[in-house]
Every structure is written in C-alpha cells, then in structure tokens.
Image (cartoon, rainbow, N blue to C red; front, side):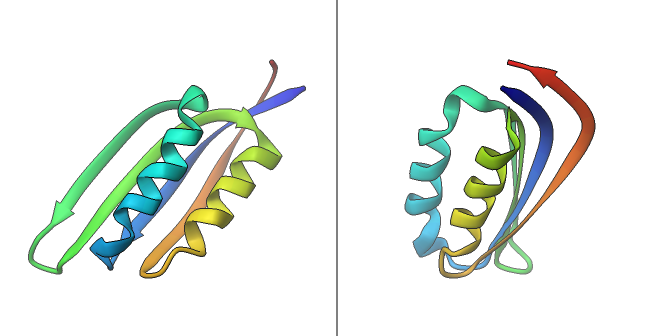
Length: 85
C-alpha cells in the first residue's frame, strides 16, 4: 500500500463541532505525525493543521468527513512523496 504525506488544514467556526472533530482525529491517530492549533480569538475561530502520513484514500476520506461537520472548513494538500507502507 502506498502512503502520502499531506497537511489537512482546518478552520473551526462552530466550537460545538469540536468534539466530533476530535473523535475523527482520534480514530486516525496512528497516521498523524503532528498537530498544531491556533486560537484566533479576535475572529472567534480556531485554525488547526494536521500533518499526516497515510494512504491517499484515507486522507481524502478523513478530510471529507471533517468538511461535513457543521461550522468546519477543511482542505488537504498532498506532497509528491509516495512511500510504501
């Protein structure tokens, strides 16, 4: 199976969705390299970046599930590095 390295960028506008977001990230914990969260209090949003090394279909599925949460926007950016798991 081939893995890709990617960044999933997340903007949380509705704090009520954070528990659902954290549950999705917890389910994918074995693939997550690192996570950075930045509260932007002046705008009332939270910015989260997830570095991940996983199969491409898993990354796109996770990003899609996150994007379907209420008040959350997401985008995945893939590296050109492909490795065999």
